[in-house]
Image (cartoon, rainbow, N blue to C red):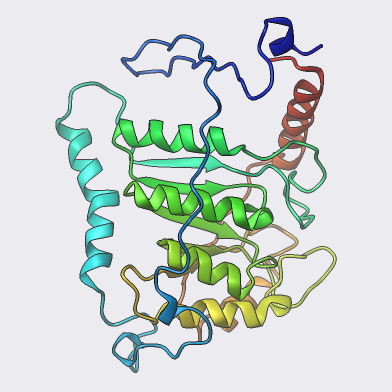
Length: 299
């Protein structure tokens, strides 16, 4: 018998107990027996004329000597102001100490690729549920935060789930960032997330060619990558941009020059980063502990 059954809760009922957050003025809410909140099914497509293999808007294409888009739309400006500037200004004038500007929502703990510097491939930790996702977004919105960066694991492991998360967050006014290794970034997934209003896709790739020690490679996802880049220049109410972020380690350093040269001909913003020392060991222990706690019911 589970804990909820022992306490008299059955069927679709669920028990919630919210914990206090450092710096937040609200006290914990009382336990609720209400059914878990869900995420609405996104309306798709909102911009049918922009889905599929559509030619870019010539006014937005890079000009000679400039690798980036040369014009922006008013909806894009409005989204950036609402996501970044207004919350920042509010954090300077509102009372209290808890005014987050950017939030990281870990929707997945698993990954489809096994990178030598990461722990996420070999674990059994389940991804975020729809009720936790919705309550998290609602709570963040109430704090005044309007930038939502999805994190993993591989964020696109559950494309229908992430579509719901992105759509719900965008409808509440969030500027949404989606990172991915690209292997699951099929054109139909790109279309759905872009149509929902993703602000930025971040492509995490460490080499050009696919190697066992560097599985996050550009070669297997060339067609997806080109499709994503092309979509930057298709006018929508709020177009998406693309950035890239290879990881710099002793194993990837030899491949980075070729990778950066290859990317040089593509209109993306590139930044490299280094993993924390012993990140794979320490985070594997954390993932194992989370799996154990979930399995045994311990908190």
